[in-house]
Image (cartoon, rainbow, N blue to C red; front, side, top):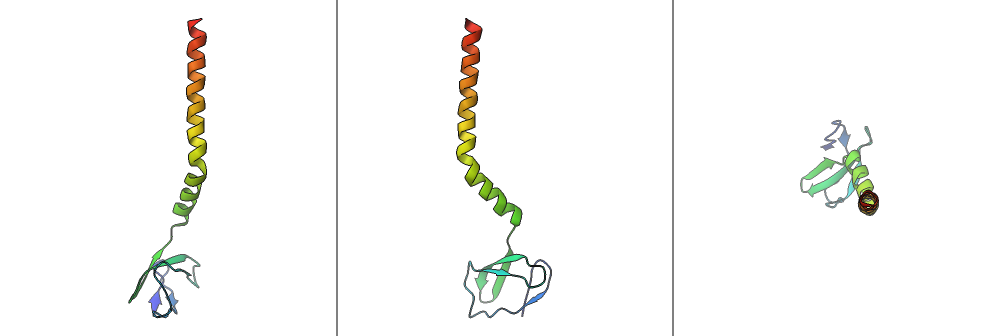
Length: 84
């Protein structure tokens, strides 16, 4: 029997039926767990905050670069006005 690493609840997992990388859910705490090893089965909790940060990072990367460029343009315009 395998226990949830987060809450310690028993989980009915058959070593022959799971694959590395598979995502399971704890029946008690509903935490998502990734199978990192199959014989014996080893589960690692998936950090929800980390997933959200990765999604935000993927969506925001292009926008952040554009914002930086806009700031540089504004600074150049301000410098040109000061010179006049």
